[in-house]
Image 1 (cartoon, protein in one colour):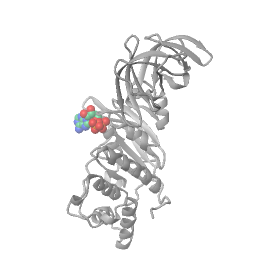
Image 2 (image 1 turned 45 degrees about the horizontal axis):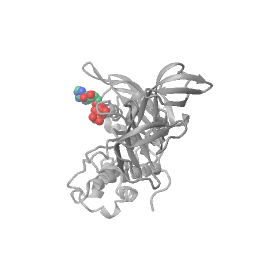
Image 3 (image 1 turned 90 degrees about the vertical axis):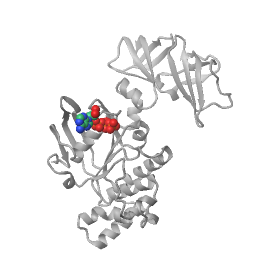
Length: 362
Ligand code: ATP
């Protein structure tokens, strides 16, 4: 069976005031982050936001222009990559084509001079964890992309590193395979207990896999938190629209009573929202996730009419694009269509949401 107990616990990683410049351009612009021992942390951001550069600084592939990096409290930013002892996985599998699967996985142990009996045991265990045992004698060219990436992961963890760095490891794989390997990596993380620093531009992947997500934009961490908190309580419009699908509704604050705001959208829809300390009067942007919008064919208390501009049946959900009166677009995802027919373009529907369904952005 698979290993159940953790045979190592990961290291803490502290990045303090890290700066990496290319000329006058700040690819990493004063980033600080504290990663807990054994944490699965994802750097998420659009292309060019500095994810890979930050990972490379931690790996030692690039050197800091300012700041420091501590692993278990000890500075490592002057330690060469191979002495940091991290496991690494990249988008390209970079397997040795002339070696079998088990020779590939054994390679780091050979380099480290681990004795043969121990190495064989370690390789067998690791192949088992990655469900590669039956492929042990194959060459990489006989395997699919997903299998090759599992070999690359096995090779990265065979020494039970305290830190594993992964840079877009699943980007080259198709969606189904990606989703199944996401789950495998999560399980692997539970099994081996290493600290994992994972880079992706795919918000769904980040939400699925991470203990915490650090959202990067333009070389800075704009928000760091648990997936659910980031999804529900994004700090600004950038995070709200980068993580998940969103409706960002401009609204006027009509009244504040206790912790409840009464707001009115441009289209004239009046709704309640939970207040934030920072919000008082004037205008605000309100995030309403598409799955939090209630839809009906007839007007209900507090509903607003919309007209359908597109409706796509996606299997488990129906994705509706609509326009509020006044032309504001609204994206809706409904799971409960009961026996209703699919709406068609031009249909009139009635939408509503409550205070608990929206989040006022600061
Ligand atoms: P991607 O997902 O596209 O890899 P990223 O978030 O990982 O994006 P980085 O690769 O870290 O981003 O790059 C951050 C910025 O630094 C980009 O604007 C990039 O063009 C720039 N950059 C990276 N490496 C160099 C380099 N060697 N010289 C000059 N600019 C660079």
